[in-house]
Image (cartoon, rainbow over all chains, first blue to last red; front, side):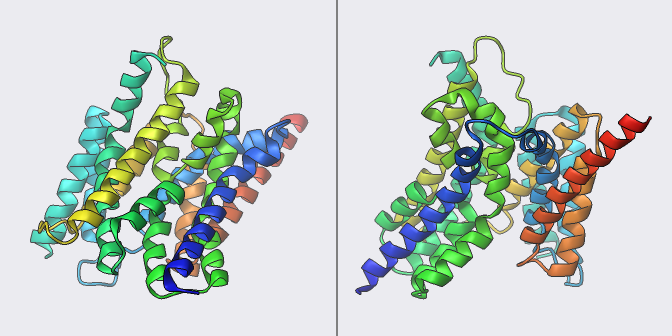
Length: 108
Length: 232
């Protein structure tokens, strides 16, 4: 098979499996949802957002040259900004600016 | 579909817009650097639409990976999406055909916007809101990946660290949920299990065990809670 054909096949596999994973709960439980699944649906968001935060920070190297300081300081900045104004856009832009400044200039 | 719904969806999507255009551009640049034209970036962003998977996908395509290893990789990287679907079954139930697009577009970022309680005003129809928000986010992603693939490395701008915008978005949502909910067990449990699994299994392998333990732990928590309320 030529390499374009192979690339197309790989894209089809990635797209197909990703779709399947995303549709699966809706296929399985769309008619009648078991109570346990509804319960999970209610509490999972809280656990999963925490999991996503850890997932985003998984590459942080505590033993490396920066000791994870840019990450810790910037997460703290986001927390404080958000506690202060409760404006998601401000917290995201402020935190990102803080992190970029730290990794490019202070620890760069 | 009314103006108010559109306005609300657009406002709520803004934090993702910034992140997606940047991350999408990064993906487009990487893919074009491997010799793939912008059509490939478009195809992947329309059909796969999963940020971290598309980054991994660049290496799979360029390295000529086998079908089996591509399938396994996709399962491992995207297994977390099953969780997102489970938590949206209730809210997406009455969306009709829109449900399938909303389910297809349930990325990390879209999920983080729709999983909470968005307190929508009366004029905003939830099913239109969820559909529009999902669609807008995918548009940002597509625009970003096309920009990256077309402009390639022409633009020079030190973007190191800009991917922190996603982390920041999730942290703000964590705070919002924490303040809205008096029951902090699920959030704390999720945080501790994820950190513990990260330390034990390492950055590349901690997601699946963490999800399994979180799922089982939450179910056990409910069983214990029920038994206590029965006895007490």
